Image (cartoon, rainbow over all chains, first blue to last red; front, side, top):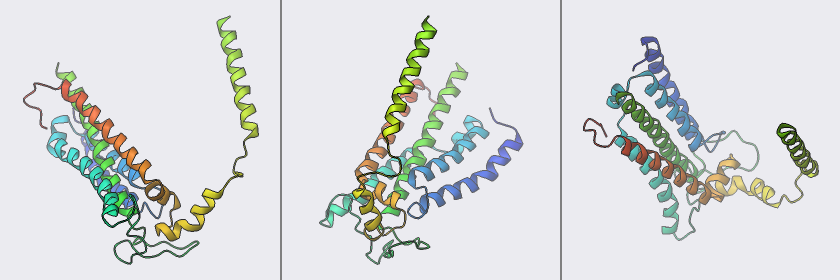
Length: 156
Length: 94
């Protein structure tokens, strides 16, 4: 059962803003409050908004369960993979090998209060992105599966 | 009678918790070696301003790996539950 045109239009308008805000929270997890879990939950809220506004058949046309499942698995594999690369470099598991290296996310940070630089943090932004992808896919697919249960209960 | 007994039990439990809470020292922990270490070395070692993120994803990375695995397992459980519910339906768009 789809909602009225006003609700659907509002959901369309808000989805982009929610998506951008969630991705901002994920991307700036090493500078501002927030991170992968929180940002992923924000993006999943946007997906939930679309699911609420449209009917089950329309949602299935827009969002594929297989893609969300792949997204969730890829996030967890990426998280463990980023941590496992440290073993290949001869250090310990979860060692921050990109910090202070000068390459990607490798700019050193001075001690004390400073304005903050996005290109810092070593592996922390990568892990934030991985966890964000996982939470996004995971929470969205939970909502989608529960909706499928309701849809089939209404048919029966 | 039962209500009075429950009320007495609740009051006793509240007094018990209050007695414990009086002895707590909020904001002034006696042993702060770990906090001082993170504050002194966190920005240099993890190369980021957010000490909380550096603790969650760097110093205590194993904990976050466990959290991610718990979430993954929970989602797998939900998917399994509803997959069985919708079994035998040819129109299911997986």
